Amino acid sequence: MLSKKEKKLIREIWERLTPVAENIGADALLRMFVSYPGTKTYFSHLDIGPGSAHLSSHGKKIVLAIAEGAKDISQLTVTLAPLQTLHAYQLRIDPTNFKLLAHCMLVSLACYLGEGFTPEAHAAMDKFLSAFGAVLAEKYR
Image 1 (cartoon, rainbow, N blue to C red):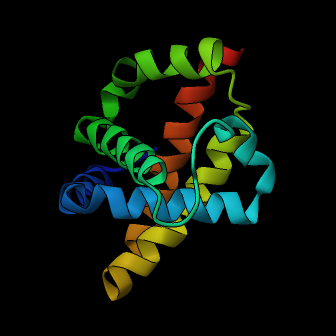
Image 2: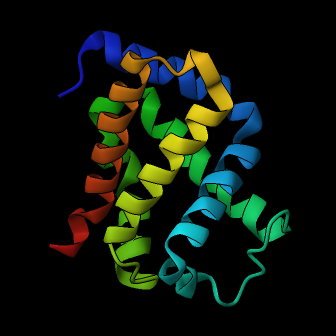
């Protein structure tokens, strides 16, 4: 699936983004809520408006989880096991939302990284985020 070069590139990108995890995550979530309003239903108990503390906090959690998964992509299933259970059995998130968020995350990364988000980085990140979402959705089967 991912070459060694792609894995290294993904790791480097997420290491660089960890300090701004809140901004990237909040931006991606907000894009998802605006583009796919149905995804807001899982957050009805939170203030998810632009600049809200809840949006920033949850966005940061998402980016840090993605960054953690990027450290050792070959162990993604092990790394994400607690999140698989949480999202499938407790939160009961529709797994389609993982794909929607991955798309919005790509847009946020492109905006944040600018020219640094090369076609190679985009392709590698798309593969990685697809794998990330697929792993999260495994418990639904």
